[in-house]
Amino acid sequence: MELSDILHNLKIQELTPMQEAAKEAYQSAKDLVLLSPTGSGKTLAFLLPLVQTLKADIQGVQALVLVPSRELALQIETVFKSMGTPFKAMSCYGGRPAMEEHRTMKGIHPTVIIGTPGRMSDHLRKENFNAATVVTLVIDEFDKCLEFGFHDEMAEVIGQLPSLKKRVLLSATDAEEIPQFAGVGGDTPSSGSRFMKLDFLAPEALAPRLRLHKVVSPEKDKLETLYNLLCTLGYHSTLVFCNYRESVERVVGYLKARKFPCDMFHGGMEQPDRERALYKFRNGSCAVLISTDLAARGLDIPGIENVVHYHPPVNEEAYTHRNGRTARWEASGNAYLVLHAEERVPEYISEDIAMYEFPETLPKPAKPRWATLYVGKGKKDKLNKIDIVGFLYKKGGMAREDVGQVDVKEHYAFVAVRRSKMKQLLTLVRGEKIKGMKTVIEEAK
Image (cartoon, rainbow, N blue to C red; front, side, top):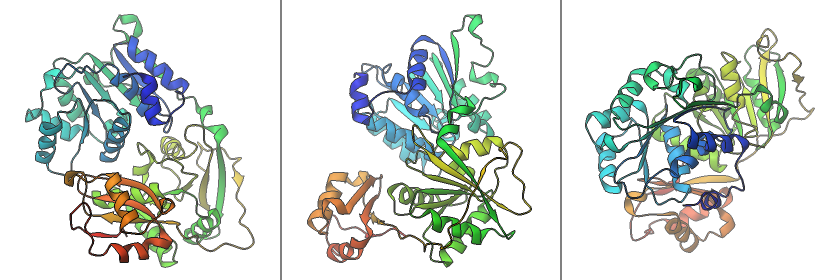
């Protein structure tokens, strides 16, 4: 499949300089380490050259992609499928039965598997797929995998790949030393191993597109100041970072008590709840997401206009990754540092940040223009986007402009629907079958 066809399917005009360099390095080097900021397009930087090396005449898994989180695995799987190649891909991660994933492997015969190190090593130990056909290993967010304690699992995975020919490591930070088990740490360009390192971590790359603001709270408890700031920002996609799960829940509780629409995202939530929160944030049903640093890396959420540091980041690396959620690619964005009078700006942040001035009259909280519809059937039930949209047009009285993003999962689907039409829609579809099936159709809260 030609690269131009893939870019057409992805609705991309041209590659960035980093992606062009990665493509050339992938083709010429045995192993590759790519360092590039969050939001710079690293996923495509390895997927594009990878798919061009896959062979249609080989049966079995040809490439494994290790990632630190379930969300990143699903994101990469979605991008791969959007490329429109004839090859199959699937994701594997904890929190669901491994047996279900094994059945999927046997059913679709994937060429690429994306998964977390623990779940991938489990499948390899059980010989759920033939490791002998795997020739390429990609480890995305490599430093994060190490930080999360996946050292042993990654070593085990690599040790079970006898035919491995190429390793690709990607990160948004420069690790001082790559562990020996990765197989590239001891290699240098002069050693004849054809190991290559591309470093696109220039600190000036993001700065021109990111506007920094300091927001001072008169009280140590900064909730009132945060509420005022979010009201002032209006209905624009905003990610608020807290350092602790308990703080996330406290902030969300305060905002909702004041009728401010928002949602939360942290590692203590059940996976379906995290997935629902991210979907509502992506489709515009919820413009403000309160999160721990779990959302600072790996998540592809386009169009985030504002990042708010409710708590100062624990270090410069966290600060960089948080800010990397906005001003992605060629877009611009804003970062707000909320401090009370006794808090100091961290040393790694420039002191000449512009002071944010509130307007004399604060606006009321903006209401979301979209709401999310939950449909209790999905891919496993042979339900697709066309089926859902057709149902909403025919049975729900929806017009084209009333339906937004549609995301069909294995066992259910989410649909963005114009909020003003949601009540009417639910009345019209009550008791109706979708593709001949009875199911739950309700607003996702």
